[in-house]
Length: 468
Ligand code: SF4
Image (cartoon, rainbow, N blue to C red; front, side):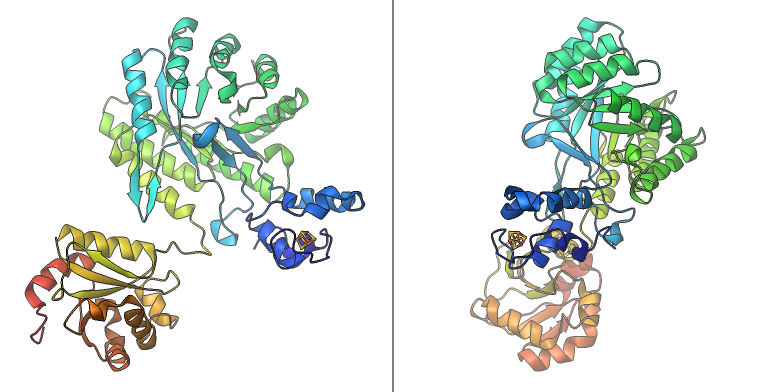
């Protein structure tokens, strides 16, 4: 359930249904505000007319998320952390996917830093029609040499990526900030020992700061002091420990902080949370084991509300599971990821090529299409609009029926592209094969349940003229 109901929001709108916001009614605008498709500024009468000042104030308080949005970086690659409304995705949706930063340190030579930055900047893996990316760089001051640190920051600042400056020494952080404060780096970290100096540095440039402490209570104290000293954008670091050395407690602390923010309305806890799974590398000589453990810690933290993760490994086997998990969690559960329902040509199909059918649920489509492409099958793939449902739920919800397939076939124009009238349907749709045949007049062939078997199935069974 959303934290605020449309009715509560509606009560604080002008209620004139003037339509200036682009929505038909104030109630429709209230729903759009809750879903963040609109912002309160889109209601021009509300923000411009003095008589609505009290309503505006109440509305802002209502729709401001309990977890503040904090922006790191600038430009197209800037990332927004936090901004969440609910504890669990199914209650509404999560809004800002967890940012994944990769570290460099100032004891690396310039070439290595530049190469890691380039790898992060260009990283992209397409899955279900979306490109999975990494978000930024964490620059660690390890050498103790401020010249080296400044030079490492300069190398990173040449890229378009957001970055964070990592040191507990205020002087070192100042060197890093001064390289390019306008790039809005995240300053990491304010601790009990350096809070005053770090707060002054961040406040003077309006930069976000990560506060670090091992207990939620201590973190809230640090946040209160940072706020008193003029820091508005804060990220919470409750610490990360490797498995067997306190990881469980760290994960619990993340959940405690998020519960305080969302369920208790504790403003001091209402900030993005970060984790540093790269601790998996501490004292670990086996690089494969370290990278795998890092992925496990990161995944556990992602599931416990982490809004920012700092990784070391650039290995695909470590990053890909994490980015896939993130994609699954941060898709809107109310809107299945869909592809366009239409006729796709795969390879170079001709008038004798098979016509296969699938649904427009993105995961189904991309799995089927990539299996067909991998098998070098030339064919037509008819994607039916099932409102983003996979085959079985689409049949259960009457979104994949004989008449739906008939309409899809007619709209696609495939009957003008092939000479035969044969349609291969997914094995899971076998029980509606007769219904499709009756509705369309096409001969229906039940294909394999597993799409990876389609190429072998076509090779063995397909014949445009015969019985197959
Ligand atoms: S602009 Fe404001 S008053 Fe007009 S319909 Fe939209 S929400 Fe209602």
